[in-house]
Length: 218
Image (cartoon, rainbow, N blue to C red; front, side, top):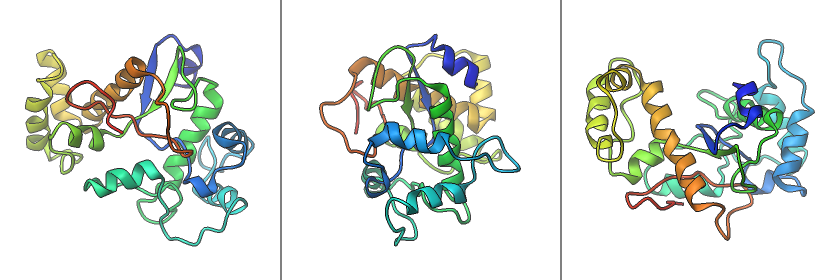
């Protein structure tokens, strides 16, 4: 994946993972400095990227972590709409910290433009399939387990209003929640590529979502 991203032979690519830390934990140099700091972290013994604990240590050098699960502004917006979001600085059960540091490492090593801080050919865009589905008034939870195929098929009925797919593609998305999420996430890249960088955005970034009218839903 890293080699494909580095080549940048695409207009935009969506990644379903957090691209930043909450504002108070962002370094003075902004997102670029955050990626530099993550790039300097050593990989964990059991994986080719740093541990969640190392990300918490990085954040704590910027500001005290005095909340159990701090969230970014874009995550709080979706939480207010009823979408469950993981905290990028929670390293406990189902924690978002390992997820986040893996994504930040990928961003740093890919050396591609990262939306919304930068745009251009081969830019990377943060996606969140649950938020995308919610924006389309489709089921946004209860479909991620292998046995929840009926719920995925309900989603695919609604998704057919936005996208044409073959019988083989339908079968794959019906069978695999990962395949369905990957398809839904692609709309984040489409929306960001079509509409570019917003005039204003939070220091800690944005989740890109395409609404029912084809505009960015932020």
